[in-house]
Image (cartoon, rainbow, N blue to C red; front, side, top):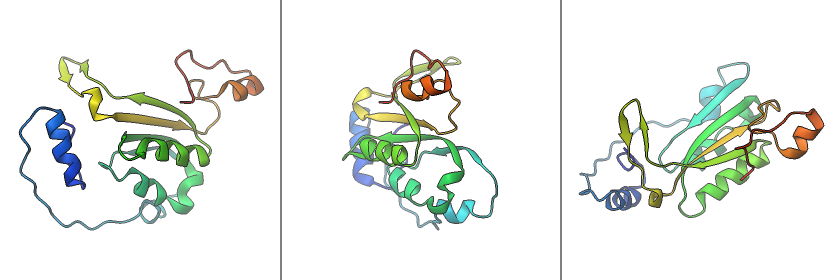
Length: 157
């Protein structure tokens, strides 16, 4: 559920208020951190999908990729749009050569399980592709060059 884990305690409280729930007890615990570049440097070959959901530290995680960036083909990043985070993530991924799709998270029913996510939370998924063959990501200009028809729901927003 949104707002249950974050490094940013002030956001936790705001999320709980938006969800109309009593704030949870805050607990902290030290953890050892490592950059994605350090973790992924031992692996070789393409990174087919990089999924990032780090509760407010998306930019730090993405920036920590360093020399690993060229190996990433697709990415999915969950972002809460506070303080320009969504724009910053979009800009970084675009600078790294990704075609982007952005989708607001909302409530949904999957396999009988209702997930409630108020739009006021400002949670988004940013999907990126730079393999050049995913029709749902290929821009109109690139599609014309490759003679690929983009999916009707695709956008560069």
